[in-house]
Image (cartoon, rainbow, N blue to C red; front, top):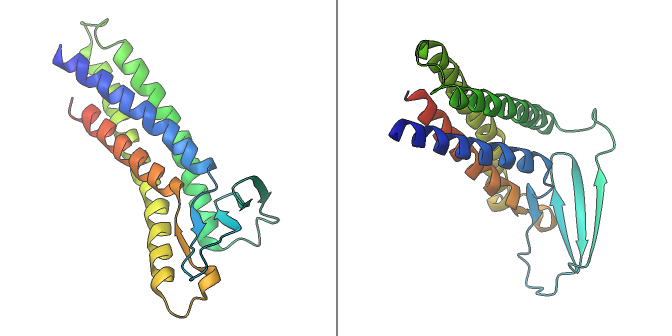
Amino acid sequence: MACCALQITGLIFGGVGMVGTLATTIMPQWRVSAHIDSNIVVFETIWEGLWMDCVSHLGIRLQCKFYDSVLALPQPLEAFRALMCIAVILSIISFLMAIVGVKYTHRTKEDPRGISIFILAAGVAFLLTGILVLIPVSWTAGSIIHDFYDPKVPTPLKRELGAALYVGWVSAALLIAAGAMYCSF
């Protein structure tokens, strides 16, 4: 019975991690403009994401613009896009494998090894997905922190950690936890 509860918990963690991975990929709040001047009146906030930049005017009006050219993007951004797209696809595949593995675990008593290999594959896929999410999220956070404290970077170009990075860290933790639960079988 504890085995079944652990499988269901892993499935829930994997599902929430999958949704979080998709949200992290889509959200434009990877880098958020930092307001560190003495001016306390801020009229606009700038968000930078993997796919678009957005400007919020007084928190009322939001204008977003997709990047003009794929060829004009910096190489790290292209790599982060690719890693996050692979992570989304892999999270969906691993979630489906986990559903099938959990569904047929107790139905087939005569061949438990075949199902346990299926659950193990889902666990490894969840672990890999968590690592794929963790790389671009942590790398982006590191570059934001480095640029924030770099005196050579002009104040208007300094950014803070956006909400998408926090969602990405939580998603990666849930995916890694789900993978660890399924690999423990």
